[in-house]
Length: 114
Length: 113
Image 1 (cartoon, one colour):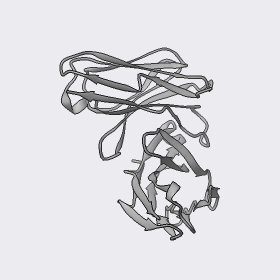
Image 2 (spheres, rainbow over the protein chains, first blue to last red):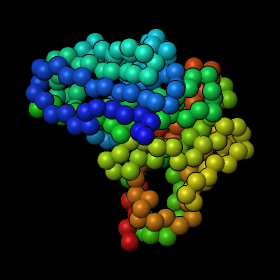
Image 3 (cartoon, rainbow over the protein chains, first blue to last red):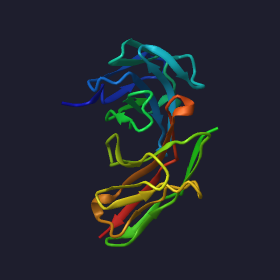
């Protein structure tokens, strides 16, 4: 069983379109994240939710809107896609309040905007 | 604020060479420290961790020791293999900042036969 699963794994789309990426974790964790990894492998945190509540909202264009219907799911919707949005987006989860807990990552969703 | 600084790459080594990737951190509290590895085309996975000063994390021949006095968590392996080629990320998690994870910029390692 995959612990953190993301769909789709690959997404190719035109500028100006709207797209969504879904994430689900079956680890029973209460905190989920979205990270963006650029072509130089730099990881940037975008959002974090704890029990469906937004707790981290970094400086991200408001074209990006996360949504957490329950603590096992965190989806990312992107409006009006731009070329600079091309990247790999990773979902991750952990149990908050445990300083020893690790982050579990999904396999990533590679978004290419043409 | 909290941050992680790691050695820039890329690093290219011959098989069986010794590996060191430097990592230093800044934290307000008592963080846990991690090394994550990302193999080509995959997500990040935990390689090893240490949760308090002087702890040594180890896995797959890799080791790192939590050094509070030098605020460091350097990754070492005595003899690298081609299969170790990947990007390595140093990270910390700090309860003082609500378990936010801070990642270094990643170090790309290529091991040649």
